[in-house]
Amino acid sequence: MPLMIAIYLTVVGCLVALAVTKGFERTLPLFAFLVIMLPNEARIYFVDLFVLSATRVVVATLIVLYFVFGRRNRGSDRGRRLPMKYLLILYLGWCAVATVNSIVFITSLKTVIDNALEFYLVYYILAKSVSSVQTVHRILIASVAALVVCCAFGALEAYAHWKVSDLFPEVVHRLKAAVEGSPGTPSRIRSTFPNAILFGNALALGIPWVLYLLSLAKTAAQKVYLWAALIMMAWSLYKTVSRGPWLALALSLVVLYIFSFSQGSVRRNLAVFAFLTIAALIIRPGVRDTLKNTYVETLDPQSRRGASYQSRYELMRAGTHALAGNLGRSLWGFGPESFYYLGLEAKVPATGQLEVLESCDSAWVGVLVEMGYVGLFLVAALLTKAALISLEEFRTLPRPANILCLVFMINIGAFAFMMLSVANYQYGQQTYMLWTLIALSVVYPGLAKAENQAKNGAMLRDPSPVRA
Image 1 (tube, helix red, strand yellow):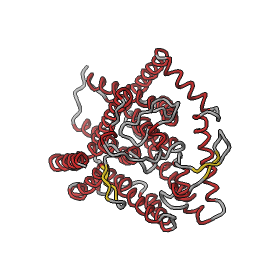
Image 2 (tube, rainbow, N blue to C red):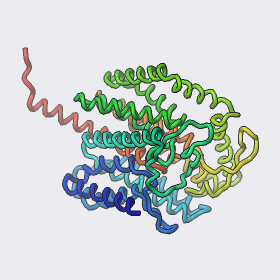
Image 3 (cartoon, rainbow, N blue to C red):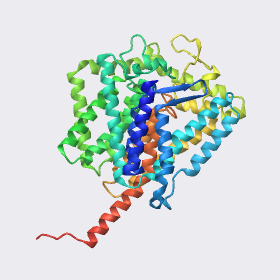
């Protein structure tokens, strides 16, 4: 308890001091750093009514500071359109419908309120408060710094067998097996995240950010730090032993390389990163063997990894079967956070026996079961709309400013892909990363255009002398 109180007071004090001395907008990078870095176990339970986590303290502080300080400078965002506003309102309205018809009404109600405050209100605050490209870059830099700290904790976990979560009371997470590992599984690090797969999700989002920031680096010190961060994050991703994030990152980097023709430095850095990766596979045969064995075992339904892969299909069958035959449940599902109360059964590929599903290893299936087909469509629409906004701006923004739009689009696509294999939506630090990058993706193009126009205007007013 004393440690938790000390953490709460420290984060609140830092955010308040920064808002008072530097202005509300300067608190946003620190907010991004804290919601990624702080462990889920740093929490205080108030009987069974409420859980006060460190992250919730940070979010609550940001909300209060926004209404106290952030709204004083509304002139900068006056007239700024908030993309996806009506789609979000429609989604929250459908959450209310699903909650009213929930089999666990109180649990669903608390979940919807938590999500509305912790993710969608944060999206609104970020989209309304970020007023410069510099702030966008600062948020990305702070997010990368948080992941570097998490990687350092991961190194301690891998080599010193000490977890930062050991400082706090134990929390039973949704994917307990992914947290603890299982016999015959290589050691998996999770750092401050609820489980190793979610840590891998965050790293798969963060590595493209590092590659983008490297293209902006101007000093040797900045480049050394970012390359060190990139290597640490790649190593940590490997140590999570998570196939979904591995594949998501590989696909992300391929897309980034193909379409980053406007930014040669990004391609060069990608080529160097690929060279280092290949060199590691040659120098460290154990790494190559781990990847090869993982691939082979995934295709073998009798192996542990193969059974895990096949279980995703069984999970989908169980989810669609639960909704079949009832029109109402097919539309609005069983209510937010109701999956763990349903006792759904799925066939175990190795034995052919039916077993109760203790976890939902697919966010898409979780949304389907809890929110119905309408809820599934709305979540897909939210992510698709955000990705399409970034795609359109990538096509229209002048080079090289458009490269960040490409990175954001790749991030959103990667997150949607990783939702196939883990319950990563509206849960964990990576969800804060998702809604942060969505908020940045919708405001960045306008800010970049304004900055470009200001530079062009300055050059026209005060042209530099032309040398013969």
